[in-house]
Length: 70
Image (cartoon, rainbow, N blue to C red; front, side):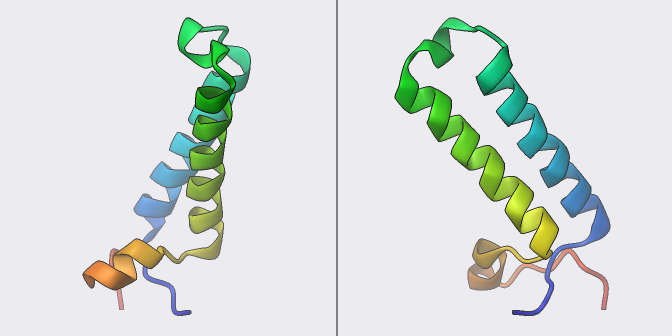
């Protein structure tokens, strides 16, 4: 598992992941009243945070994308 994500990509994923989790759990928006939406968005946020932490995106690998400088 080689790193394929650059610093800017990681920072954006981390920020988006945290924002999604905070939005889903603390916003009180009507969309998140349904449990499936609330925890679905939290799961997406956790995946974004996980890929940022590991510096590896499986979808990038399949598509042949690298945002990391060599």
